Amino acid sequence: YCIEIDGDTLTQVETARKSIMERYCETLKAGLPMDEMRNSGTYFYLESIEEYLGGAWVKVTGHGEMLMFGGYSYLGLNRHPKINEAAVEAIARYGTGAHGARLLAGTTEIHRELESSIARFKKTESAALFSSGFLANLSAITFLVGRGDIVICDKLDHASILDGCMMSGARMIRFRHNDMDHLESCLRETAGHKGRRLVIVDGVYSMDGDIADLPAISGLCKKHGALLMVDEAHSVGMLGATGRGIEEHFGLPPDTIDVKMGTVSKSIPSLGGYIASSARLCDLLRHTGRGFIYSATVPPASAAAAVAGIKVIEEEPWHVQNLHRNMAYFANRLRQEGFNFLESPTAIFPIVFGDNLRTSTMSKGCQSRGLYVQAIPHPVVPEGTARLRAAVNANHTLEDLDFAIKTLQDSRAAMESLG
Ligand code: PMP
Image (cartoon, rainbow, N blue to C red; front, side, top):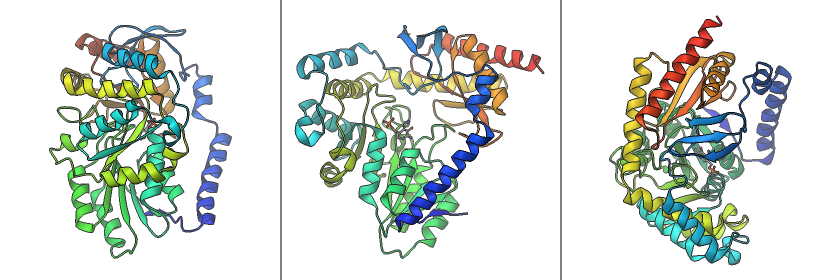
């Protein structure tokens, strides 16, 4: 069951790319889900938010007021007054641009402060800031492994991890999602390998909403002498009593993960990605990371917003507490009303309706009733598991959550009445 992409030679990487292109062309011929949705009048994509209203409500062009029930702002911190103020102050002080890469006059005090804030929050020696999470993954993975090394990934790892592995030239092995026996067999089969072995998993999987079995994975990495990297894009802010992520969730020490990757664009309302790890690794990434050296850094106002966002999470514990209350309440209400959803201890609720048409009819029904929730069709997810990807956030009131349940019920009843 090991799917391997052997990146030892460029030709082999090219072959892998070619097969992706072939699949893409086949999908085009077969017709894309977007065409199906457009034809059935259920297309909801790149809709524009006109205004953020109070709480979790937004005004959407052509749709009016909607309750936000998707998106990544798990702590609902966008427009928090302290964060807005920090960004405005930074604009007054530094202007709107960073003017290129960090190493060519693009570093301001606020970029340095953000790296220290991330390291403090994630309890690591240091952190290196990138202009996006995508670039942080590409840069760290291509630095950590190369030809002669092995990288072992969960099959549902984020696209930026897969792209980083492909670019690195390391031999890539993917294990079945969250299957610890399979991970162990991959580690056993590669025992005695001369080069480095790196295991990479997501903390929280954004489409299934489930979490990595960190106690088991870190135990296996220790036992087999492999390095562990975890993408915490979704777990930071969401997991753990103080929102510090997956180690805190499992009560594990902060040095359980060797390399912690994360973003400041989800629970933290800004833009940017980071690697939090040892001072030595972060220093090396600042000198060699391709995304660090060859791409512009985040604007100072975004860095200032991220610094303030981290401070808010540290000083105002009720945001994480509200999120956890809402996660438990909504899961319970979905169960009571008999919805088929993938259960997990996260804020992501994949509500499964099976085929694409049923799912997009549901999303259209919800949207027309004022609930901003999107359909995730096949082939983004496996056939027969098309779903609504609902996400609760800390700004939802219990009335908002009841409104969401009522909307889901009404939309389901309307869909079923169509036969
Ligand atoms: N990792 C995961 C798990 C993600 O979901 C994302 C973005 N959705 C990224 C990495 C990339 O982060 P960014 O959007 O900051 O580039």
